[in-house]
Image: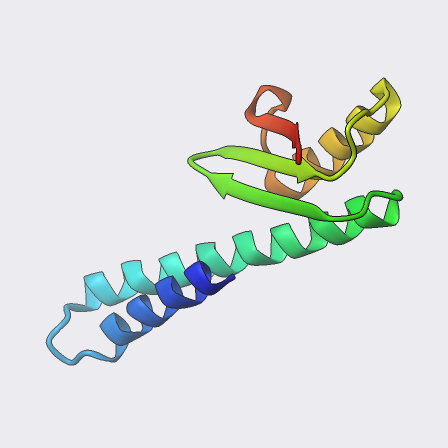
Length: 103
């Protein structure tokens, strides 16, 4: 969360800078939008997964890959499918781009 906040702050400074071109400001605004969308997707996905009975869920998104770290040590196929469906729907990624690991 802190990392995303710092990134948004950096882009916001670019937008506020009078010496930055309109094109660069538009790119910075798009990046802020992308970061906000990712943060919201993470929050929604974590809550949906927790509602399925999983405690301590951490989701990391990087370069089109979504990593889910769970406190559980064993999952059955139905549980894996539930998590994959949530992530697929929230981040519009393919199953092969979803990595589930355990703490």
